[in-house]
Image (cartoon, rainbow, N blue to C red; front, top):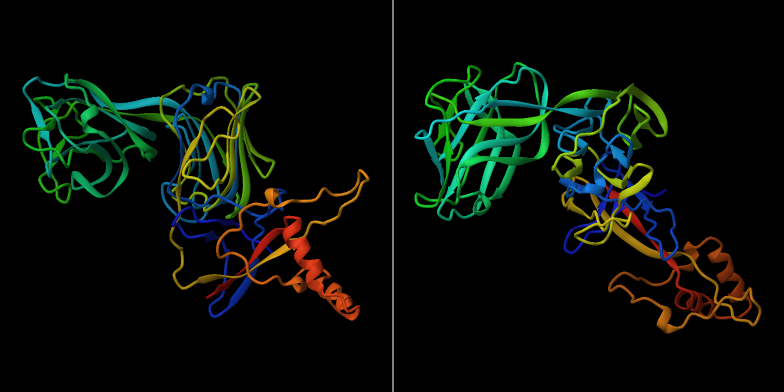
Length: 460
């Protein structure tokens, strides 16, 4: 039996997936790592909370004819803000915690108070944070915040924006979404500037939320100036401020210039009864029909005659535990593969479609259960290649030293042919013939380039 696994890049640990293990028990697994020929092992990408991102590209704009497909473990039972795929609200696919997978196409929407007064400003720097409460009139997936602002002199570090829940008329708890840019990139001329969140966040109709902003490493001479109105023109919220980096907040008067941008669902599809497990999820828009497939079974479909909104938001995959591991993700537009990604031993996953839409992955580095330990107890060849020479066309060409790869340090243990199918019987036969078995096994191991698997031991 084999399991999904990911070799640790650099100093990162290896990651392996075990669905369940009882207390005080041990389970053995084989990890088929393979050689130049695929062995069908479950080599996968184990994402960190931030998932995997791909920069917005003209080749990845979906239009009205596309397929998006991901394969791996889909978590439909626990977690928050989970996103399988997110294109800034224009297209979203996510699992909820009720055994459903949801896919939707967004229609642009916003919440705003787009006026200001020239003399009503806040200087944002250090521990001085500011914000504005607001209330959506319908469900909305937000992905951006616009403010009327400008850079004063040369503030260092980042300018940060946040979305918070609200309690008592002020921000509370952990931020629901965040976004950051270098403060130095903000224009020195006052004007509306848009800041993008790192992921879309669903806000519910009739519920109060707060946007907030900070420039922690700015100072009294180098800061970001943000404008507001000199009257209470927005009835569904108000300004607020914090002098201790967002630990405590106070509600104020008047309202900032703000635009919370995002999308409302234009069409929503739902696949029900999807238990947490390995699945392939595919969404298709073709011929005016939007369809959702799970494991090649059509789960839901609806008519949609429009096109996906072309926005500047980047792509995000496998965020916040939506997929503990991913085998592959791919995007096809107009019948042509435009993006294809799978695990690679690198800090960047090269786009296998050849369109240079490379992905930036985050990696999981911690266990989900500290009471479970794992060890590699053996690393053995499981498929030896023949070492045969001859003049006929069917003979195998001799493998020279130049053809052999570099032996990884610390990986190989003594060869154990008894672990191979029929290995012990062959060894016994050779010894009965007074023929040293090492002559056979070592020539096969080092002459033909075998493929290996480690044997993994889990203990709970």
